[in-house]
Length: 311
Image (cartoon, rainbow, N blue to C red; front, side, top):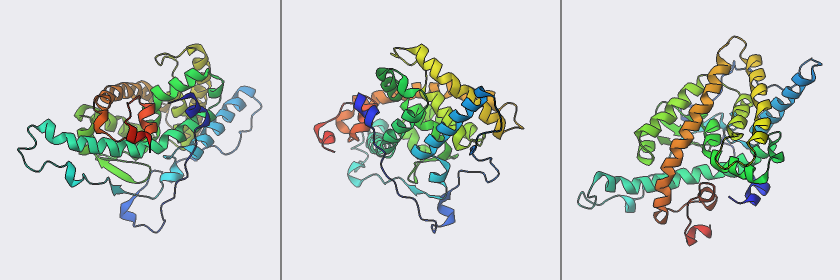
């Protein structure tokens, strides 16, 4: 991903699902009793508190404007299974597939390509979200690039985890992959880790402002490899942490443990991101077999063939 990709990332338009779709094919991601994100400033004259509420409002609005997994965007989502494996990619006989690994490789390639295609639209959106996070654009431009590239999977999954159920994961357009398909793409351990994180994360019933602030904390990781000015990143993330604590206290007044529980999810998500990096090695070793969106390949440092560059 080039510096200009961060600086000038565009946000594609997306259509909204019809409200007349069948109820049994919908995904509901919000609790009607859940407190809405703050819409007005509180009655206080404390400048520190006012500054934190300004952060909450700014980040919450940025999340709603630019993140595909915001509540309004996913409410009433029509679910549909991911495209079937094309017949040409299925071994014609047991003799063709000399081993289990050989028989699974066409499925893995196909699923990886579908996975990449469905994640790709989130890249420009999350770049735009990052640019709206207070203080992000004041960081060194190289650090902006590193934080987005090295933290993209974690940043993406902080929002996408909302659409994980016990047996499937649903993309922002309603397409879903089963847990079994994710085990083919990755492995049992990684799929289990993803589902475990998401299921416990979702029990917190976070609203958009809270997910946005959590995402900002994930983005602003001072100790990412090759960050040039970690002190500046740390200075930028501190108000996000304080704003998240304030927002959680306001919207979850009866849950004394929610702040600690959510902040414990930060290292858990970072560990999941580290596992994802290891799985990307398969991408990089098999890039000639894959057709990937150029921006997806760029953000994950995967070599691209000439045909992909023409997309």
